[in-house]
Image (cartoon, rainbow, N blue to C red; front, side):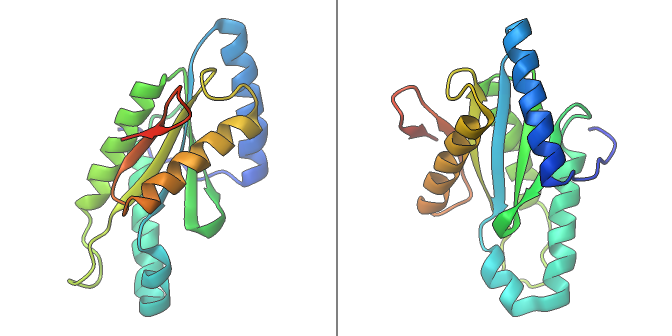
Length: 165
């Protein structure tokens, strides 16, 4: 585990993503990118107020504590988090997200009738996008598929254009 790192603001993340893509291209490295989100976050926030905010903070802390110091995470709209995995191929990024999903499952929510689950959409440079926009779109597509499949799953980009679990 790495020391806890703060989430960066979206503009910083966007700049860093562009720099990491340039670096990956120059040194012929892979670069993983994932969008992760608590599956039931909207319902949870509507029903539980302050308790849900504390729980979301715990989920964010879990994400930060279970990524490497070289990884970068930022908050996205709809309470999602986007994570950049430098020098990481698709399979390694998938494994990192499976680890995050497992760690979130271990968390205790404020209510016994709620199970915290995480959906992840994972992609990689250069296979599934060579620009920041293309990579983010690929990760968003995979995330939407994970969410549509009922959540609590990691979906990765595939060469056929279809996502894989």
